[in-house]
Image (cartoon, rainbow, N blue to C red; front, side, top):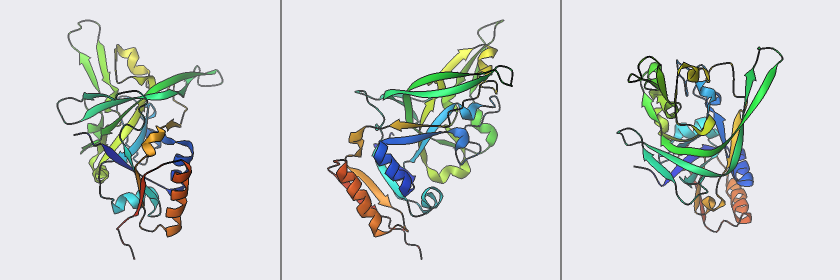
Length: 271
């Protein structure tokens, strides 16, 4: 089942930036707090090829989430899942035989991703630029028991093609799985794939595209969301937030002409 709304924990300072610029930041997986996020034994740079924004489906606010992502003084934002989609419809397809889905949003403009081609590992560096136009998600994160499970099924060999091996690489699996000690997050995530590719196919040179010879140098991308997504926004203030915070947020939302919103205080009590 696809949720209609999901939740994002963040600091108060980041909330003000989100509201000022109408953007959410997508970080590369190798810059996330989970050191194995996007890990693959096949691709040493797999974690650099995906950018992600992390959310949760859990309606009740949770103490560990407050502590990790806002130090108890931040906020939790409730937003509709189509906040990045500027087209008429979301594209939704089912993943495998399970209950997970691949959802594609069309962005309002292309965003730049840069990677560096190291010609001789010294001074002759050339930079390559790519414009991405799509966000995928929110996709439910699957939790696995072992590090080796993170890249299971990532590459399949087409055995029908005799004499010239063809590999199918399911990039969607990069960042879709996490080790199960993160299970408490009940995470959904939006992702941007370098090349806007979910599945690629080719011979062994295709695999080399993900190795150290051409690392991505873009660390993050600030993606604009639809302004109308702020209508009926719900913001919960952290357990240790103060009353002044509520008035500051109210003022910003009114100045942005948001007609309807809720600002609540977390019911979690800490001495």
